[in-house]
Image 1 (spheres, helix red, strand yellow):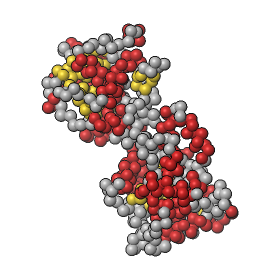
Image 2 (tube, helix red, strand yellow; image 1 turned 45 degrees about the vertical axis):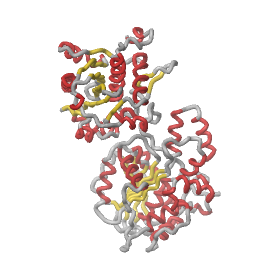
Image 3 (cartoon, helix red, strand yellow; image 1 turned 60 degrees about the horizontal axis):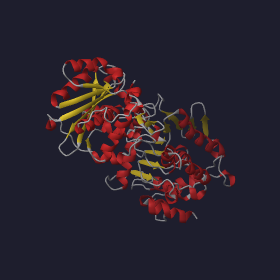
Image 4 (tube, one colour; image 1 turned 135 degrees about the vertical axis):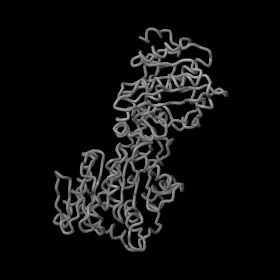
Length: 542
């Protein structure tokens, strides 16, 4: 049964064939076999095997063999980093805890060394500690040899003074560590780089160290997990040669049918051995038939599909990316343009979108973001977005101090008005009355764009039609990020408005773009914004 089911993994995920076939795995110094033998001697309190023996199934054994057995002539491991992307319920944490035990009191222990596990929260960090403490308490010989400090989430192997600790993102003691092995648990949930950077720096202080990451798939193309997943994919397809990095990606393609049984078995290697629970997965899948949001979560959590933006984004970034192209503003000088401005509270992200008419029935979409300089690092951590990089690359203007300088935003709009034949600048009136009056006094055409559902209904449809028909040329990664996180509020007639409350991240650049694109489409056709408004436009505008 297991072998026949494993054939699905081999055919669907050929880069993981080594896990399921009987091909030899290098183990010149016997270190892989020693690690396997040690883990099999462990006990686990939840094991159903006789004597509570640790359950190391064949696919897990192959991973252990490859990780510890592939050694250089001097006996050091070739694998310095491992990334395991695997769905919920496949016992990732148990496997990684067993691997850490190899370093704590097994054949890879080093006298007076430290090892650790890291996670986004104290609760998540405690899971690995509980796994290791449970193994220690269930294995009498080990229990006699260790001190377990539950309150400190620390285990010490007394004979050689090897110390394991569980750390979370709010840990203050990560810097200055010199670990020999680190397990990063559910890295997809980590928005900050601080903790990972601290332990990685420690790993780099000595040789023969390893970083092991095991995680379900994540959301968005930002943050430490995405950086590793992107590298792993490049190693898999040969774009990058890195013999020190072991990618183990049980991920289905982005467009996979969530009902596909073969992909379910291919991406869940534990299923032939009874985990995760197949009946519960089937019930979850039935629920997905009627809920797009549940469908996306199911694909991420159980088929390991990495989502581009929000858990249930409005638009497919694969289609959005087809409109990517370089925009030379200077070369377009003098062209007709329409501007949308989404002014936030002064401490938040603001955006100016400029839509420029091209010669081929297309429009160039240029977006500039604005954020307080003092908030960039904090915002990068909160939103898991590379604001400082976007600032350095020119996609984001950082205003000095702790607030967005509306004068800087207005100055940017005036610069665009000098460069192009600006037909209209539309604003969310709530934050922009003074700016609108200032621009209007100098002859810049301004208009209000009430942020109501009915006022957004037609513009959202227009924006969607424009990019689906490949009529928008855009080049901003800041805008891409915002589009990928845009979710909508809907009424009973399926009218839509961007929903900032439910968006995974800040979507202000996308809102500004929707405003500008809709005005450009109307202006280029010679129509007024009121021509396409619903009959009850005035009622819903107030």
